Length: 356
Image (cartoon, rainbow, N blue to C red; front, side):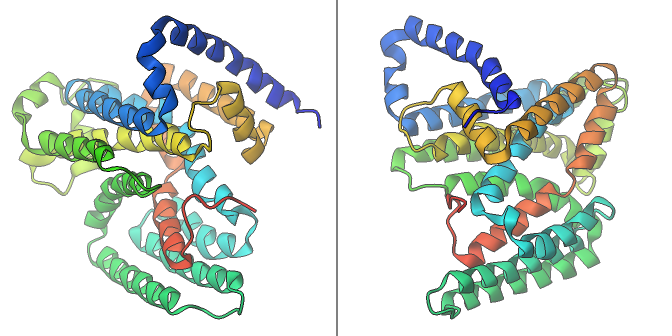
């Protein structure tokens, strides 16, 4: 079957990247051989280096990181999010997904409240129950599934009550918590050897360093509270990302959010896709593009690429407006991630479940 014009165009864009990588590998020679042969070494090295770079950006160039990170990596990470949590679970064709999860969370775009998130979590638990019953040979619901549904229902009800009583605090908890949830998803993606805990230790150590190990007053002086990036000042980020924290602790929480948000992007764009590949050795960019087009369709990926270019062009003239528009578009994605984790938990499905 002939590939579409969009797929051929995407493969054409990937070809120079393959040629460049091949030239670099030939120049590096034996130094890169262990990384080519071992996926675990490759993935964990990327994780440790990526975390170190993002931590450095959080402390040295926080405004750049918080302003441009969503514009550069936001759309690709949403593609990864939908690919592994929706498409590869076969949920896009399930009516229950649209009725029990998407419908409640669609309202989040208009009323971004954590109570709405908890409604999606409840719907995800019900969908997990239905999925497990449909997959059982005798059509009966297992005791484990019932217990897990009760856990999800209890946590959802508790979360709804907490969000009703403390809506502002719950909003900040959702902002920071969904980054950690994604990192947890990646860590439990596959069985890992003991030495691979280095990436987890790096994450914990850098988070502690950012939160407790530096002088916030000097950081404030180096990052002016007014006049940088238009509306995207340090004052703005302290209010929107750490508004419930004591004033003296807000810089630390802003820096930590920037670090964990960038780690969140790293997981969806680089680490999970690499762990998902069946081959131990790397695949070409052309093959990666072909698989992505197979999952979404060539035209969807082509339009997504155009959207990224358009968002970047907009950011050249109005970075604050481009960032705010992107965040408005994807405001419900954190709630979707949390709801789909509840679905996986109740249905007892693996994150690596392939779509049928």
